[in-house]
Image 1: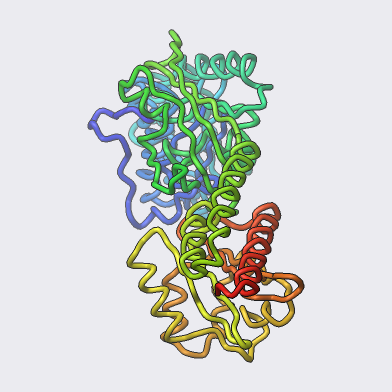
Image 2: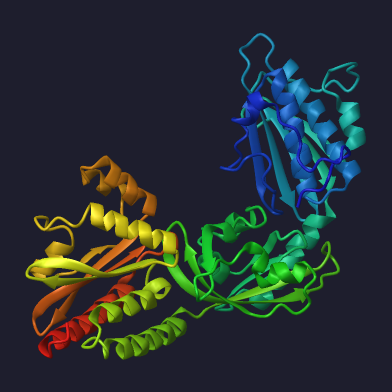
Length: 477
């Protein structure tokens, strides 16, 4: 993690006019640099760029683990080289660009300042601005000047960075222990920054490679997920075992979460444990997180429990059909979806008998929307289409643009406010006749129904349809 510079600030000040240009491989200047990576910042060869390059050098040097005094040395040396590139590299020609590169090597940070100007030889006796060779020579452990990669001049400055060596050694050592494990393993430092991730963790967290993951600021990887307990209550970053461990809880217990990957909507049940790891070469204590994907077994247990409770409820349908389906809808939330509605058919018309959501205020809103804008019996792309054909309606990922077909602007706004993401309208069929529909909708959980979830919803609807049919046959509904 970046260390404070001489001023005590953790982040260098960047002129606002240049901030938009400070993208570094898709990251802003303030992002943490990870060892064994190359950083690059290219800016116009103009005086305002000098301070931005100096700020970048300070940030990168701190992230590479150099001490405060050496961070200041790097910033001054880069400033000298950049000043001379801007002032002397483009005499008698249009200003081009100046580039700062950092190559983080084993135990060494190499800063390169190059331009695409006319090129020139250094003057070791240069007073004032010049190439600043004497100053750079006093600051860097080693430096040289030569032709740049784009035909101009390049100044190469090398600084010892023991933290890079220990970081690389740490990753190699951890890879030998955790690299091939099927469980996802990450190691975080005292600031919560991930310093190691095995291949399983990279895949689980949805990143392209380990370096991409390690570049993320502390907590960023977790922000790609919505985590809840089995009852739907939210889980925050501070609740994760490794965060509790780093905060002083010596014995954080295991944590089972339903974790939804927000970009894809994929939901998994993850069992996370954490343990301390002392490393003499690393700053402070490290926390090892082991995350096991227990989706298959947990989903099987939950669905078996749901079916058992649902069948008990459905057995009472002949006595109280409406009460039965209210209970079924309540069971479905949040186990199967964020919203559940049950509509029973009578003389070709769907009658809503149950609507459930964890938030009572949203239930009231749902009833209001349904009463003001009930499904159109003439449309085949909604519940009445399911009622007529017996085919389920499945929208794994709802494009909000589809709601543009809703004519009433107020109705459209109400549906957008719900934030529907995934929808299944399943036919409730009893002895060959569709007797109603079971509607499941995800919204705030961000889940997307996969094939297994859809198949389970269809099975529940089929069982509910048989209960309706039986209730009617014995005159109870």
